[in-house]
Length: 279
Length: 288
Ligand SMILES: Nc1ncnc2c1ncn2[C@@H]1O[C@H](COP(=O)(O)OP(=O)(O)OP(=O)(O)O)[C@@H](O)[C@H]1O
Ligand SMILES: Nc1ncnc2c1ncn2[C@@H]1O[C@H](COP(=O)(O)OP(=O)(O)OP(=O)(O)O)[C@@H](O)[C@H]1O
Ligand SMILES: [Mg+2]
Ligand SMILES: [Mg+2]
Image 1 (cartoon, rainbow over the protein chains, first blue to last red):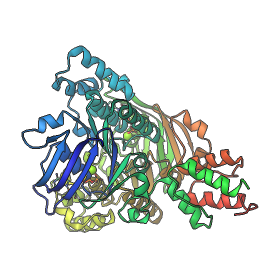
Image 2: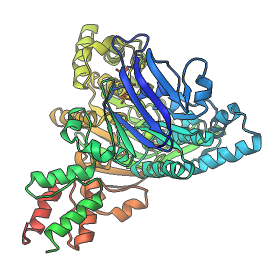
Image 3: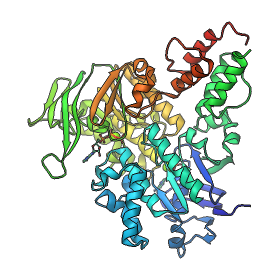
Image 4: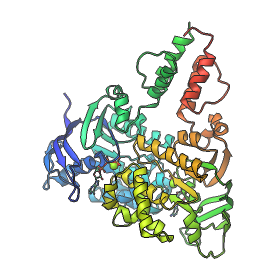
């Protein structure tokens, strides 16, 4: 049995000036080395969850444990050491006046020795292909470049847990794939735990597990297969289905019979080929 | 309102040690009532191009024609307000355009700045907030106490409330949930059709570019490298690769299917319905 590295137990929360509870009785746990995607409509509470896990706010009710430590006012600096978070708007997290200073900033705070720091800064910026921009001001980058730098800052920290809050939303499809497979590689090699908040269902389809949020509550948790079986129920929640499933549905609607559920284009192509041509 | 860029160059911080050439020799036009999508890799200059369309940036060489106005490099421009009134821009990050203490004030700011009465501005705010899928309750909240997707919707409502002649959208669906994405894109398209509005959309969604645009412009490393109809652009995946771009998913799927079955479709299909219709014709002779 794997160890949970993040666990939430009956979390209820509202912002100081909010009228309703923003999170209601939210419970789930995430295991070490797991990749979990959080999906849900706008305003369903995803970013709020991330902020609570990172100790930027504290729940009204319920408990959060990070790496076995109960998160509260007195432990927040310990729990944060385990977590690297990429915020939804990268401009909110830049602190340095140059790209390299910005990435170095977090490492300085963690007391990383100078030489090691330089290596890690350059290494992380190379990984996200931003090593040509070392001395540019982070606020003066393009949208996608900002997101890449924000990700580098977190990679350089080498945390145990990475929280990505729509961290690749402004990247082109190819760039998005590159970054996701980079993080995936770190997960495989270093056992990184990844919590990825995303509206990109193709990305969610590749997670180990998906948590579906709806109006401040956990609607359902399961493997991508289990979640996408919900079909129209997801659509009603403001979500969508991955392309291969929608493609298969269109075939069925137009009277082309198909069995099963296809999470990849390849599976669907093979099915079409074998059932309709290979006779 | 016709728009055209003529050999536009832009250098950030021109003349300083930090000078940075962002775009050069960019020319293209958007005839009145056309829907143009601009696509291109990260940092290729898309947002820089867009900011020229309401004279937020002025070219360091070349000129930009916006309706009856021409913004030329090296010339002082008077009265930019009339341009800004006609051109509504939804910025890449919604935080870039929200600043008032309530959502209501934020949406009313643009229209009132251009001479609309307070009452009329409020009416428009109440109308557009619901059009973008939010409830009127939100009008009294601070725009900074909203979720990312809610901020995006408020920013869109603010631009539409100005009733511009040209709508410029810089990745307007980033941060929206899937339903919101579809609803907003359909709403923009409806406005484009019903009011004959010109639209310029920067997007990383090849699907949106292929479905909505009349014409696609490709930016690469600060230059315009190609333009054409969606069908022309997406017929050639190899060509797109050199600019680090890909085809919409349905086209990718079509190519996989062609590869596996050895049967070539006569056209490139831009929607799932089109693809299924083609498939039924092609597999017609076979037992289903
Ligand atoms: N600082 C704040 N003060 C008050 N209310 C807030 C604040 N931030 C968010 N909210 C509200 O809390 C709810 C949840 O917001 P949250 O940012 O967690 O949503 P989300 O799921 O991340 O949405 P999105 O997909 O749009 O980013 C929303 O109704 C939002 O309006
Ligand atoms: N304020 C600025 N000062 C200096 N350079 C800038 C500034 N804004 C953008 N740049 C640079 O100009 C180039 C073009 O940027 P632009 O924002 O136009 O790209 P983009 O195509 O919109 O990219 P993305 O898809 O990532 O948003 C980039 O290399 C960027 O680093
Ligand atoms: Mg959010
Ligand atoms: Mg941009």
